[in-house]
Length: 436
Image (cartoon, rainbow, N blue to C red):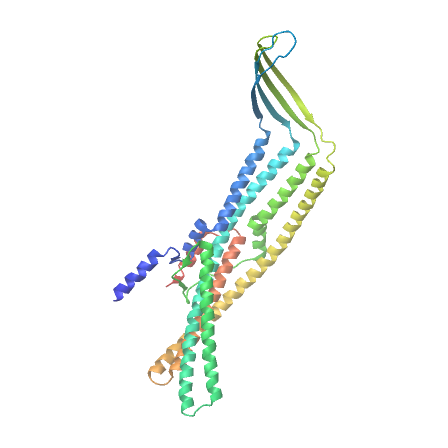
């Protein structure tokens, strides 16, 4: 019977396309393949490449060929001479080679900056997926642990309520006291349903990121030796100002708006084009001169002087100046925000170390209490409610230790991103801390 149930479970898992057993690395790998936001950003990078190619090709010559054929029908009603139908065939080849486009180089620099920006966005989002995968999986672990604790609490209050009903029947407690136990049990059941809903939402968050829900959930070892790292805020801030992706993007926005401003200014300058043409015509039929064939070649320069555009280009220059100023202001504001975030995360990083040490001591103490009460329960010294309460306290202390450890690991990943030390190896190392 057990083998049959195991076979059915394996069959359900294998046939379901939307659930799978996973760890953090599995979530990250699936996100790299199936995350829609990453696909959109990658397409934006492809668009930037095409725009760069379009801009760089604007100085290449333009070649056009025009050909036509005509047949003329003439009806003679009066007069002398002989007029018959005739045909005319013409062909024209035009080559235009731009020589002077002062704004070209600014447009090319802007297109290159846009291309660099799109590449940084792709690389940066892949790093964000490392953190996001860990964050969502940590949330899943915490939600699962909270749900397990809520079940224990529900069982504990259920036992208390059953015992209270016996005491009430025997006249040891009042109706008011009985209702308190019942109310505690009802609230515990509601809290259990809320925890279950939060667990489902945590699974759906992973589904949004990866396209599949996580079936089996690992937990974190409550007692482990963590390699605590130390960060210096000033040193980390200095690295972030050079290598943090958000800073790079803001710097590129400044360059893009600057080149756009230069390009708009250059639109006031003249343009020069070299133009060469070749014309061919062939007329045959009833023409008075008989068959006529002509060829001609021309070559020349075209100079265009923009004189007046109704203030349009001047307005574009002013607009681009404001954009340039805003880009610099956004960069300055981002630097301030990054400084604040680094200081905040470094402080939290240090505080979480202390929390973990304190939580470990509490977990060890509650574990000893639980073992003592468990032995006392077997000897008749403690009730089933006291045993369940000791189990609940042990689970709560374990969950607090795990939760603060996960917060520490997540904060460490975020700090590594500021210093450009974030890599897939970091979540591989965290995977080694997970257990079934």
